[in-house]
Length: 288
Image 1: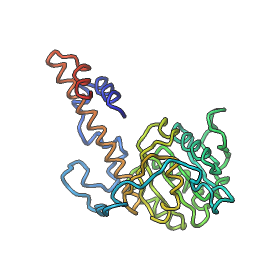
Image 2: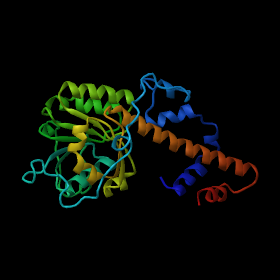
Image 3: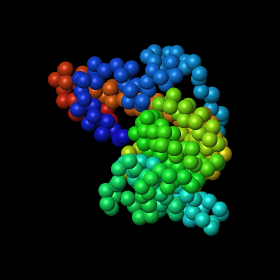
Image 4: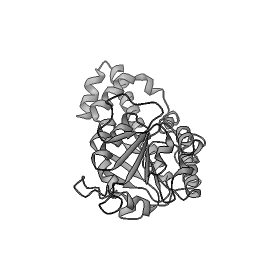
């Protein structure tokens, strides 16, 4: 979100944000009392009862090299003969962008959505399938679903996870709860399917352009196998360890930081107005 958009949000919300408290903002990142992040609920000075391991220096602590796609983007599963089969779950604004990027890079992309997508809304090369069972032979499943319950319903309750072959990888790119990430990781491990959490920072336009910031956590081997996929979807990839919930905690932290920035802008606007100043002019000065 750029500075001027933050300013617009702050001016629109104004005094409403002044009365909001930090605990309420936690909800923006799906942070609930079931997440197990006791240190963030509601006092921020405490540590979680199960803290994440401190990242190592170098690769695990920050950015992975994520080159822009070139001719060899590892879309081929067997070294050049057959495109990797990728299933995409969820064809909302973000999911459509992800599917289009993967199809354009040469992946064999089949996509499923709860409701049929509008005609002409998908990029060339994306095949829409009517049933989840049509994705049972996917080597990689990329999901961008609304929340924890939707992930559980589609992957677990409707049987897709049980149908995936051993060694497959599920990349969950949605913002879900930390507790949900832990449960899904355990569910996948029981089926010998790798679970990688990869929530993103960026709007649908960034997804369509391959310019997302991707926050990744999960098994090292699975993440390495997806090197080509990361380069197609994101401009930066950030590692947060091998425990998938680490990426979700990082995304919640980013959402919280953004919410607090908007709150601060709202308070600044209210202060300016209280002294007879134009809130917009004050915020423009702060963000110039």
